[in-house]
Amino acid sequence: MYQVHSVAPHLLPQLLREMPKAELHIHIEGSLEPELIFALAQRNGVTLPYANVEALRAAYAFTNLQSFLDIYYAGASVLLHEQDFYDMAWAYLQRAAADHVVHAEIFFDPQTHTERGVPMATVINGLHRACVDAQATLGVSAQLILCFLRHLSEEAALQTFNEALPFKTKFIGVGLDSSEVGHPPEKFQKVFALAHAHGLHLVAHAGEEGPPAYMWSALDVLHVERIDHGVQAVHDATLMARLAKDRTPLTVCPLSNQKLCVFPDLKDHNIGQLLDAGLCVTLNSDDPAYFGGYLNDNFLQTFAATGLTAQQAYVLASNSFEASFVPEVQKNQWLHALKQTFQKFADQD
Ligand code: ADE
Ligand code: ZN
Image (cartoon, rainbow, N blue to C red; front, side, top):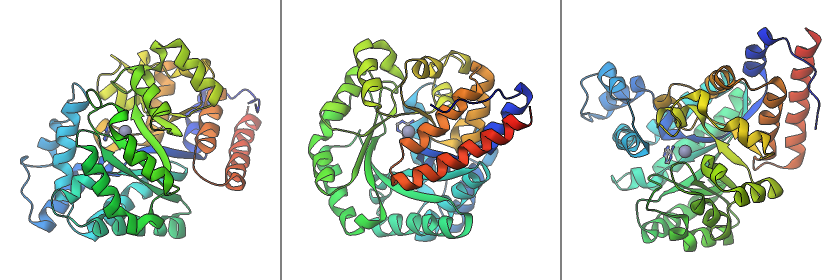
């Protein structure tokens, strides 16, 4: 492992901002800022159950995952046309570029839209066009991951997958999100096997609020390559050893966990424990418009609250490239740029 030279404490925030990084756990619908929700509502003639931006923001006081999801799905109801999906993704990608995100693997929830009568083509083409423009204009590489809503049936997921198949070149994998408890991964065994047969990458949310058993079935029944969240793994020593041995990445989202009351306070987050156990942890924003921060906000606030070090900053950024679904040559180029950034900050000591 690359040894980071000591970085003066007052330089750590700037290092966190400037270091190149990948974001692997961002729901694009969770990047819809209240201002854009209201602008799209007006453009599309959609009536919202909130008087204005301030009233909507005031409702962002969550007690658990479900209390958030209810508002998140309401916010997504303003998305109707291809340009709406483009505008949402483009706004996120500009924010990501400002945070020195060089690569993003972006979740989208097609069922949230197709259930309202929005065609699959509208959703995927709008998002994909923004990803293409991000590479050309911002130098940010961006890929899409299609998520199934786990509170719906596997039949619905299979139908969604079949509707998405004509656009298979426009997404790189499938994931599993929405209400976790009561909807274990094994419910989606068939659709994940089908996605694998089509050469797609596999990821799933597990161990956010749900038990370690859901992480075991994500690994052993769905055969996922990464687990999204996974913070409940600390309650199962055998699982921790397995994750460390296989270097299965956990895409951890501290501000999300704080806002959804998974931990009482950011200082109580177990990211340090997961890193100390040698797990391939990455840091991510989940739903930045709802949880009070994009990727650099997550880095800055988590490091300030938990006392993570510059060496751990390097590990998190390096893990984000290792865990990404890009070719090795590309990973090595980003790792080289990461080391150069650390060198620059060490030299200022
Ligand atoms: N969809 C959007 N954000 C989510 C989260 N944190 N957990 C599960 N599903 C989600
Ligand atoms: Zn998530």
